[in-house]
Image (cartoon, rainbow, N blue to C red):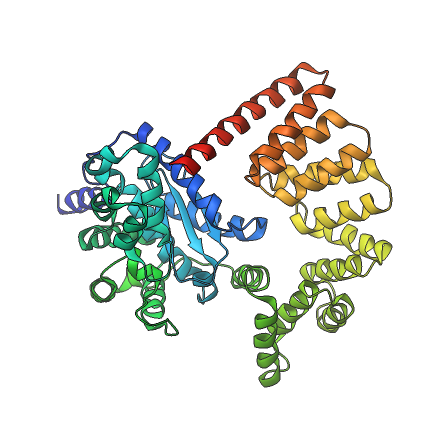
Length: 469
């Protein structure tokens, strides 16, 4: 009987509290309005490696949830800010600056677990009835402003003031309370435990957030504005670890090399390249044999359009690890950037056999084929890339270009329309879809074009409402 009681108690820990407020359908509708504000104002990262890694960690935390009513999605915002937030209906955002401060996957899991818990407990959704009187679209704008922090140090009240006094009280009511934070930490710790992650990672990253300096006068980290009572949270989590020493330590076996590749991508693709280059060169000054820093330096040199220097660094690394496919792929990128297309293509063909479906390999091999006029091969490679990383916009752009050069105009306009739609340029997307309809003969393609056109026109109208309201 005690064992059955313990099992029942453990199961109850993953049952959210009864939810008042809006329905699941209304929550989905509200989340779409909020996303329009976020994507319009914030640079959301379009990188298949970054998004896939965050998504994989998020999915591991979701695996223990009983039938979530939403499809959770994970995003990274390119901004040097210590922040993370979740909208209603399961859209979880992390800032690249926060990820760059992390030392391992356990810290990433800790933040994601907390944000998933806010959605799971429907913390914003339960407050919506209190604020419905201001209007659905305006409510979405207020929720987005509260979650984003809008301006450093602004806080929820200041955000509401910018939107007008009528909205001020409602916006403050949307902000998380200490009780919300405690509950999100409670469930977040359970999600971590179920997935095999320890709680030490969450504790470490919260301490980093607390310790961060370099704020302007009167400012605090955005994370502390949207997630209050951080000192209380640190104390509670530390006590929980003391009481649950086994659960506090990480039991999940991650791949350190995969983490380093992910962090390398964050540091080389989302930070200021000149500043990060100086930092990596300082590391190499102290540790000339630091292979990770040397690899990152090579990638930052590529960002700075210095392919010859990047190639030299990569060749140096390959003398000790001649068959490393990641280094070979990046050397291929350096050759491509230098115009050495045949040498680049040979490297990409080798890497493709080692890393099937790798987005960079497919993208740059496709581009070498496009540059050398081998259009059928280019189209096939970009189509394979679209299957491997369907949300990767750059791949769609080059697929559209290759299809156009082959004379497949209806397909080209369709693909470029999807590229612009996913880039939130709905007016250009609508133009592309209309052009596609002028060339399309096949009924299935015409139907797809019409559906995309309707979606684009709906988004254009939604943007007009945002601008007017």
